[in-house]
Image 1 (cartoon, one colour):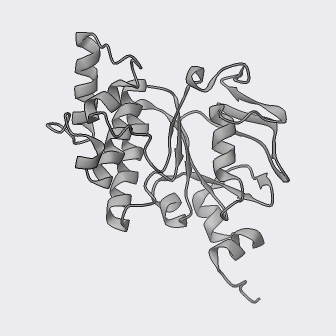
Image 2 (cartoon, one colour):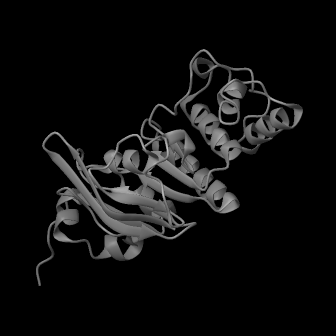
Image 3 (cartoon, helix red, strand yellow):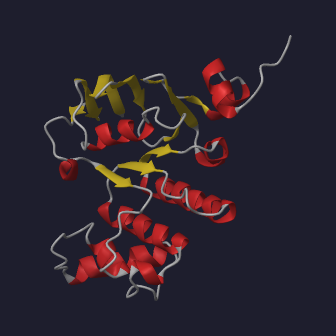
Length: 236
């Protein structure tokens, strides 16, 4: 279980608060207006931002003393975290060995991960020679080899067209089921949440609310979420 225990992050005049738990294996969408603190929430969980108060716990362990690379999490940002001078194979291999000095079994694991996401035969291509969707698949292959139980997605598919984004979301859901990963996915589009997330946490006004089942939240949105979605309040 991921637990945000009285978590408070302050940056300049901005403050974000979160106090809730997410069960292991759940896929949770994080939605809210721009600047509400969605990315800040993920960064605090990943260890890129130190909280002003509170704790981030995974399976009861306080992650506070751990550096980002020591935490049980993998993060994918909008640019997919790929190094342009490295091949797809090497970009995935970084998830296992930053030195890129792999043993035979590790090399086989990288090739298997690339094949699993549909990139067999493209191991030698650099990111510039790959489409946006293929670059996203490289990032997901790295998730597979890292085998961390917590996956944090900060709108990695935002630049993709609707059909390709839907395809990538399905792949994420499939990989999450296969690996039993806990997923927090930042998105601006409620349709993304409806497609793959069983629950949603809404971030607004400096508060990340506890997750609510996706269908329930979107069918009966609170006023702040209704305003974000551009919905008019139904008259009685």
